[in-house]
Length: 343
Image 1: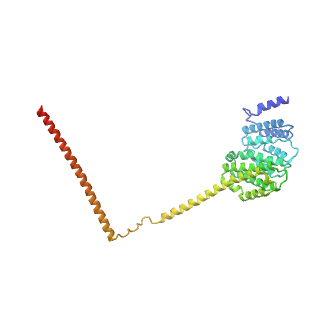
Image 2: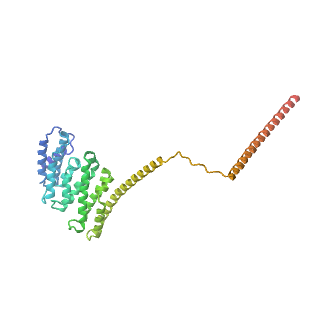
Image 3: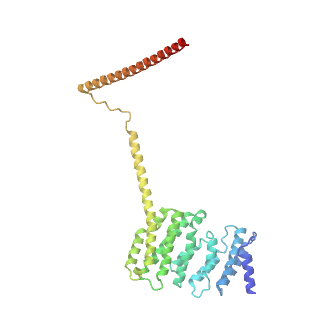
């Protein structure tokens, strides 16, 4: 019976061709809350997956019936808190991730809770704290889409909050406990690299350069290199170099833009100064000496003589050609007369 019921739910609700368009918000809210109460005590991953399918279907119904409704987000917030704060929680992370992937805009309010959990507040296990960065990565991947629907200030606040959490964890890494091993620290650093890249394309390089404190990052890298635990974590060191390279590119581009603006202003000032100058004023010609005048006369006479010689040579050539033509014509007429007499 359970297998048949699970099959019906998957086939009808997972990828439905049609969804109700006249659902009531209060009804949907009560159904979502009931589904979440089941998901919080899910006995298996399959059961949690079925709860996720049903919950997402109700959200689709809300989208079709009441667009931009925020009903149901609070239920996910409570489920997220249960997963982070309760050691014996049976919530599976995929239950929350499935909704965030499908509805990043509607669930963006959960980022404030996720940043609080990522910082370690009210989190019972380091594993769950690191898992919060997996949730945050989904929003980081969707920054380009979110920038079209949400206010820019919200996204900038999200980036700055993430940077603060990342730096706090990495600053404490040289002296942190064994629970923070190389893999967990690398998950935090990788999220930083990913966020730096996506925020650069979605929000601009200037925002990235402002949000990430380069001096603070340099201090973290130096302390990691000097720490006994972190000095041998080569993979983590590579991630930090990668993060510095991404941020260095943003800083360099920002400086280039500023220098171009400064050069443009200087060019405008120089052009304005040139316009003020009296361009109609003509400098007086340098005086020519008597000797120079004599040389010019000699050159002119030589050039005149040369021109006359060329003209005379051309005249001689034309006269010679004319004489030759006349002779050839006379010879032809004599020959023709001779032929007539003989005939």
